[in-house]
Image (cartoon, rainbow, N blue to C red; front, side, top):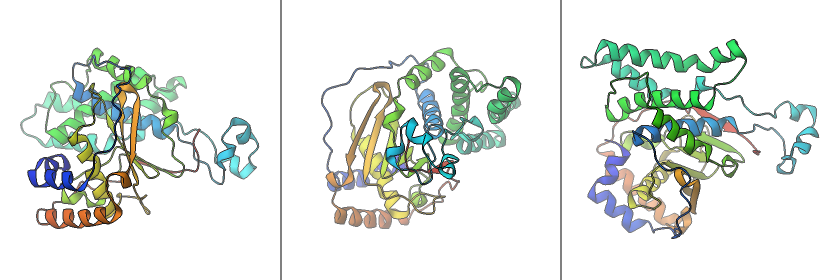
Amino acid sequence: MSLTQVLKTQEIKEAFAAAFKRPDFQKTVPPLVAASRAKDSSLVGIAFDYLFRSELGDTQIVRSGARPEQESEEGVSNLSQSDASTVGKLKRSLRVIEFLPIARAGLELLCQSDDVSIKIKKQAKHAWEHAQGAEMRKQMATGENLTLTERAHICLQMAKLDQVYRARYVHEDFETVDPDDVSDLMTMFEQVKFNIFKAHEVCLLNPPLKAAGLVGGADADIVLDDLLIDLKTTTSFSLTINQLNQLYGYLVLSRLGGFAGVKSSPEIRRLGIYFARYDYLFTFNVEDVISSDALKAFCKWFKKTLSASQVDALIRPVTRKKTIEWRF
């Protein structure tokens, strides 16, 4: 069982439809800035999540005691010595990229299977080991970071391991990736305007939800302060019931238990979807689709309804958590 499966049940679908309103969504379709050229659109979607979260986390600015008006470069230079020591871009690193927990779980599941050939297991393990130290090895050898092409290649390899865990799908080759998939992933990534993803205090990347045991496990894509964002790489610019219910499911689970690995979970007051192929971020306020009292009542009903079939969630550390006060 998973959140996606739970949301497909008739009782849950009807309950969400009755409790939550549909937010206003623009009718004008924005320009398609990254048409799909992928051979495997599902794989590219997973890899995009990894690459996006890695970049977003690494472009956050950790600043202690700095004020928003100090955001300009001139403001940074005028900080006190103690403040200046906490200011700086965090170096990109694929050693701690967000795909590691799920990809590792996929690798372990693959290696334990008697139905998978030794050749495929060796390929998967080699791809995993390469991803672990790729950034460090290149920096030590050349003093340079990985190129976008290299990062995209690794993310696609790890996305294959992700699919082993989440979908029990085993690829025939874990080391080679299709050039069209690499190109599609890079084109999408290069359109992203990361300056619209601002966090003032908290940035959580791929955080698991504590109450996810109710649905068999669930984790959000991104949390920026009080905003939870789901990443979508579909070529369709539409707001579907399934997309909305997924957001509402994350909201309910966050209200029931917060996020695992976080001492003080932010309260989600806004929800959003980032349509990557359109470079368009759609957000709306929770209070516009359900009242506070109605949400509390719905959360209580949801917990009671699913507690009888509760299963253990995938409990893992939050891969990236940063407490910040401003971001360039």
